[in-house]
Length: 76
Image (cartoon, rainbow, N blue to C red; front, side, top):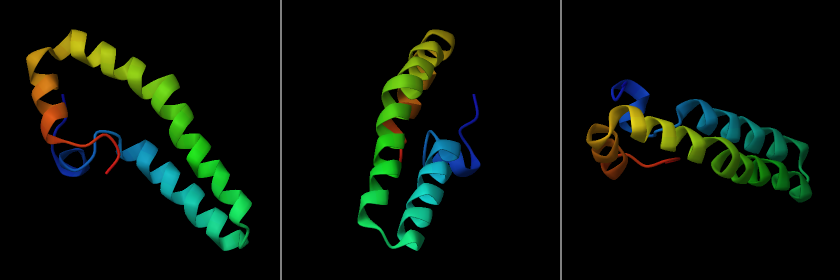
């Protein structure tokens, strides 16, 4: 289980970077409606991917993963 580097600050650095890139792209478009995209991405990833990954990691790493989750935020 990796807990160093970026993983010290967020449990999902790749998903966070995608969300930030989508937000930057939406702002670059200058269209407030485009901000729906990063918000939808965060919701879909949280419900469709991250919660599944969390369940699997909890089964694999047990207490160590639970401790990591308590000290490290999901997004930021």
